[in-house]
Amino acid sequence: MDVRDYPVSAKNPVEGAMPLPVAYLKREIGVVTSKNVHLIVSDRLERNLGIRMMQDNGFKVTGYTCVK
Image 1 (cartoon, rainbow, N blue to C red):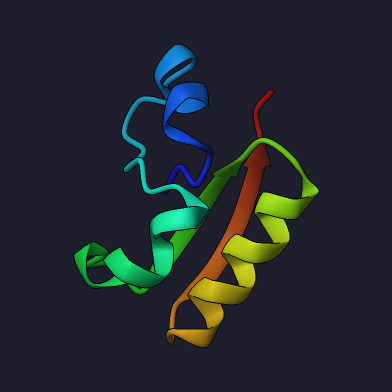
Image 2 (image 1 turned 60 degrees about the horizontal axis):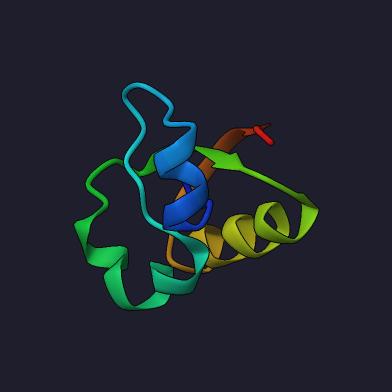
């Protein structure tokens, strides 16, 4: 799951990653079907927020990749 902002993820897409920015996670969490997720982030803030929000909603974060 790509939690980077839409303009950032559009410029440097990650094949197979579902784009869902951190700002939209709370509202759109229902579209995520897998309980195990790997996050694509651009910085530590997105990583921390994404992991916390996913775990609070019952998801298991299996890892993350930081893409600038």
